[in-house]
Every structure is written in C-alpha cells, then in structure tokens.
Length: 197
Image (tube, rainbow, N blue to C red; front, side, top):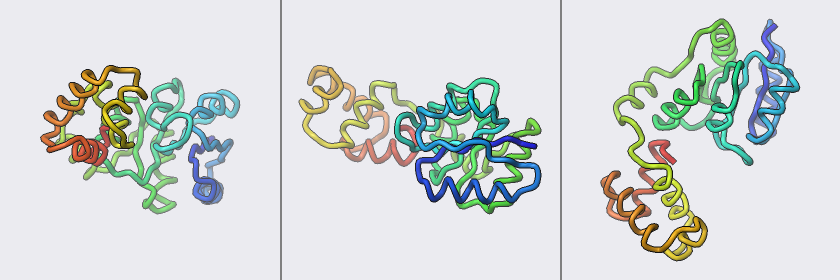
C-alpha cells in the first residue's frame, strides 16, 4: 500500500483528490493538511511514502516545504505550469511535478512511479525550464520585487524590508536590468510569469 499525504490549502480540491486517490487500488491517503508549515509535522505523524504538495499555501510555500523533507518522495501538484517553478522544484529535490489539469489516472500513475523510484516531469515544461535558464535574481532582488508588486513607494518597500531607500533603488535597478524590463511593475510581472518569485 502506498501511503500518501496531501497538502493543499483549497479544501474542496484537497478532499476531491483524497476521494479520487482513495478509489485507486494500492493507494491510501493517510493525511491532509492545508498549510505549508504543517507539512513536516504531518510527515512525522503519518509516515507517508509520497507527499503531494501544492505550491501556494499559507504559512510556507510548497517549494520551500519540499526542500525541508528528508526521506520522503515529493510530487508538486499545482496549477502553475511555470518553468521557474519546475526548476526550483527540482532544486528542492522533488521527484515529480504534475499539473492539476492531469487526469486522475495520470496522477495515480505518477504516485506509483515516484514511489517505485522514478520521476515524473512534464516534457514541455522541462524544455521551457531549460530554455529560460536559471533565475538571475538574487534572494534580495526577489524580496524587493515581491514587495514592489504589492505596491507602495520606495520608502514603503524599504520600511517593510528594513532596508534604506537607496538600497531598495539599487536592488530594483539591478532586477529591472537583468529582466530587460522598463520599470519595476514590468520586472515583477516578468519574474512572476517565469516562476522566479
């Protein structure tokens, strides 16, 4: 029996996935959580063989949560077919990246394959991930772009991130240049679309 833990903040989606996987022979859903910061504790309690993680969850995103899990196989299950997310997932050591528009049988097949030691990555998304290359943004440039995407003045961003106004301007200028954008809003959109934020 393959023991599966589901982590998704959308209750209806998570419960539907649990019901569908529960119909599959040889698969048992042993736990469900709605927050990324609950995943490690649930893994310890439930002892799953495979963890299905959504990317965007409160508390901790699925990519970060995946990087914290040792000794358990992880599949990212998401609506986001972004090449940068796939690259970050691979860097976190996940064994699979499945989009939520997959059929139930495909998801069950992915769980079985990953449990057996295989990997499941969408070919088109993998090719796109290679073509866009690595994320050129530093950690602080990503922080500043995220804050810029939320709006506010340079002073507002500086206050939120405990940086000086000049430092925020420098990070924004660098990120805008690296992304070939015209302004901070365009840079934030470009980075988000590639899965770099």
